[in-house]
Length: 181
Length: 366
Image (cartoon, rainbow over all chains, first blue to last red; front, side, top):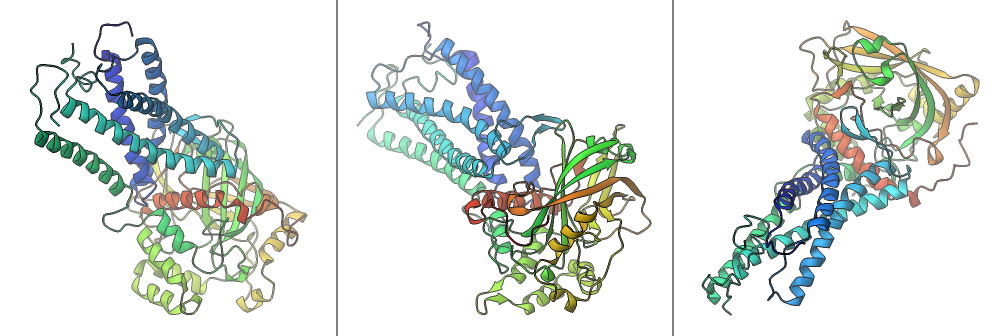
C-alpha cells in the first residue's frame, strides 16, 4: 500500500466482484450437483470443473495484486478484535479459494478420472490414482466447501455491519470507492 | 447504544434503528444460508438424490460395504481394443481411429451382494475403459439384456425398492417385484427378456449392450444418434437354470479363467445408427432390427484379475466419461447413472478397510 488511497484499486474491486459471482455460483452448483439425479447434473458438473480452474487462476492473480497494491487502512477506531477477525477471515478466504480447486483437481486425479475442462481440453493428474487419497480429498472438498460458505456468510455480515451500522466507509472501499475518497 | 458514523457527516443511529439494521443483516445472511441448504436438499420438496438411490441399492440382501452398490460381484480384465477405422467416419473419438488401445474392464452380475451366487445374476455386464494416447477415455457400462429395465431414474428407484429386503421377513418380497412389474409398462420388454431368454454359464458368450443412446460427432460435424454393443465371437451355450445352481457360487469366474488360460476372448464393437424418429431418450425401447450397424473394431480380452487387487477396482465406469467426438444423448438415465455411480465410488473408496486389498485364496484364475 503506497499510502493515501482509502479504497481498493479498480482492478482489485473488479477481481473481487467477478470472483464473488463465480465462487457463489460454484458453491451452489457444487452442493446442487451432488444431491441430484436430474439431467441437469451433467451440465452442472461440466461447469464446475472449468469454473474451479478459472477461480484458481484468478485467486493467484488476485493474491499477487494484493501483495503489490495492499489494502486501504481500516478505520482507526475499529476494535482490535474486529481488525483481527477481518485479517484472519481474509487470509482464510484466500487460502480456501486456492485450496478448493486444488483439492478438487487432486480428488479427480486420485479417483482415476479424466479431468476434462472443455471438449478435448483436459488437465493432467496431479496425484496418483489411489482410493484412500480419493476418499480423504473428497471429504475435505465437501467439508471445506461448507466451511468456505460459512466464512463467506460471515464476510457478508461484516460488510453489511460496516455499511449499515458503522457506516465507516469500509464497504464503500470495495463497492463505489466514493465515500472515503 | 447509538452508533456514530466514522464518516463524520452522518447522524448517529438510534438504538431502535441499530436493532432494525442488525435484523436486516441477520435476515440477509439467514436467507443466503437457507438458499444453500435448499439447493443441497436439506429441506424442500422430497427429491431423488444419489444418496437415496445408493441406499436402496445397498439394501437388496448382501453387504456391499467397500464394494460397488450395484453390479457388486465381478472380476477385472485386461484387454486391447483394435479399431479398424470404420468408426472414424461417424466420430472423431481418438480410439476409433485405426490403432490399438489398452482397455481395463470388468465383468459383473447385476446384484447388490458381492458374495451372491452367480446363478442369481439374471443380468450380466461388461464395463470397459478404453484409453487413447492423449489420455482421452471412453468408459462404458454394458448389460447383456437387449433393453434396460426402466426408462427413468424414478422408475429405477421404485424397482430397486421393490427388490429390497423386507424387514418383516429378512428377505426380498417377490410380491413387491410382481406389483412393480404390473404397474410399470416400461418394464414389459425387459421383463419378457428376463423370463424367456436362455441362461448361460459364461460371461464369454454374451452380447453386451450400451442400452442408453449416445451421439457420435464426426470431423464434418455431422451428428449420429447411436447405441453400441459388444458382440461375442463364440456361440451361446444355454444352460437350464436348475443346472446352474449345481455349479457352485462362482462358476462365471471359473469359466472365464479356464477360457482365458487357453486363448484370448474377442468381441466386435458394433455401433447401431438410429434412424430419424428412433427413441434416444428411452432405453427400454429397442430400435428396429434393420438399422445400419457398423463394426468399428475388436476387443481382445487377454487376462482376468480378481477384483480385490485388480486394475478395475478403483475405476468408476461412469458411462458419461466420453472422448471428444462422443456425447451423451437426452436419455435421462445417463445423468442419473453418472451421479449415482459417483456416490457409490465415493462411498466405497472410503470403505477400503471393509474390502482389503488382498487377493482371495480361492476361485482365482491363473
